[in-house]
Length: 164
Length: 450
Image (cartoon, rainbow over all chains, first blue to last red; front, side):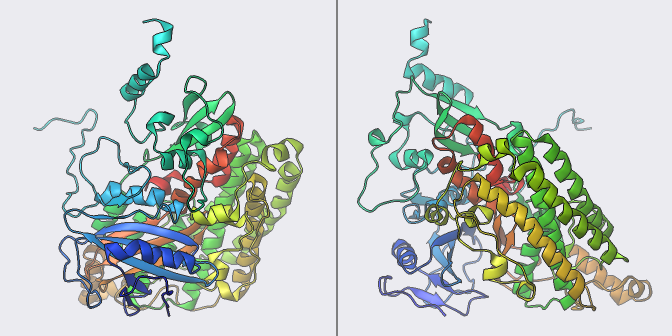
């Protein structure tokens, strides 16, 4: 069971029917306020933050009222005192995905947001330094996007035999 | 060009631009934003309404007086290819920034191209010191989506193998930590004891590392004949030798000087940074998923969660040493309480038919072929499963679109998150302390970079 605190933005869609865990589906404008209310409500830790690219899956199962977008940011919060987890799924946008950074609430999201930016090109407003983290600085494109082909970059092996 | 022009800021910037990949690096103070500067200086907790002014931060120096140097990516103490950039004032660290990605091999992307049957071979290579626990996290996520039950014996085998893996991982940590502080005999002893565990893994799963032993539905093979004797020997030997480590290190004055009171972290800072595992427990927070959110059969065995008080290097050392003993306690209980029965689920959806059936039945052959070529389909949905790895909370987030391959697989790697505590731990310490900080944070670069 999950109860949103009074400070949480109103009209946040929550669902307990989704797969296995409780999930909240805020809009991008509700997102920061919602996480803040969870933080004040005893969720001390943000364990995970990652992006998902649902390129072809606009028909995926979502609670009524949630408008599916291509990119989704998934945040897992953990309350040590309540021994409870909550998952927040934000529909981040289609072509231009941008959400607020959680850095000012949970400084530990710094690396995770950089990773989501690196892999998906999702922008985080308010992040101290949004650069690539795992890919090289001069890399082109965001490799975990679904329209980024595997093997797109030709790899030249040393002493590789030429074409016959 | 005279010496004075080389020393001007513009020239240094040119040098940095010529020899680097750019923005991922530690930059000069003027070129760094105030939030980022605060992060590199190690400030974590924020007070509302207080704006951080770079000029008011202590240790403020002219760029002429400080030096930015690289430690790594190929430094023997960085446990792989971790690169840490340090701003030094003489011997002391003012700022630091970790630069990672040198071992990035796109394992999350690869995971999207592998079926659920093959996925275990991918995740097991992430944290190469605790392969069983990686597979466990992945298998539990897949099983949650499939909604299948794992037989009791498989659960206990998984638990015993996880604990053996925790022992071997902590032994490697003891060894490399010993190496980092100059105790090379500890290096040899730690790896010697680990060999016992790896030999048992080889006997059970066929491989010493990257086992692919825990699979969706159960485990790959039953325990070998006479496993009780092997486990007995492993437990007795390693348990006795942990006391030799005590003699060698715990009371040793030089070791204590390097460890006690060095690089402390508070519970609030650890929680804000999302740090888990021994690093969090060293601050006195008794958070261990095996106890607080039990999975497998951890609620049926008796063990203690080891916590520290000061959050310094020595606490982290003591926690790991004592966790070896606690894990041996759990393994001994597994030995006594190991139930009989199947070692994998009999659900034909995830488990191939036995060899004898394949020889005589065409359908069984087709079934076997389909399972290992196409794989099994997993209902659409998304799931997060977390287990306690030797380094902290290891989570696996899987999105399925109903097909035989994960649509998205994301691994919440504890080392990746724990590394963010490094600027905080290093601040104000000397260069020799940075070695012990890297060591006691215990990052495994395979899972940091994935």
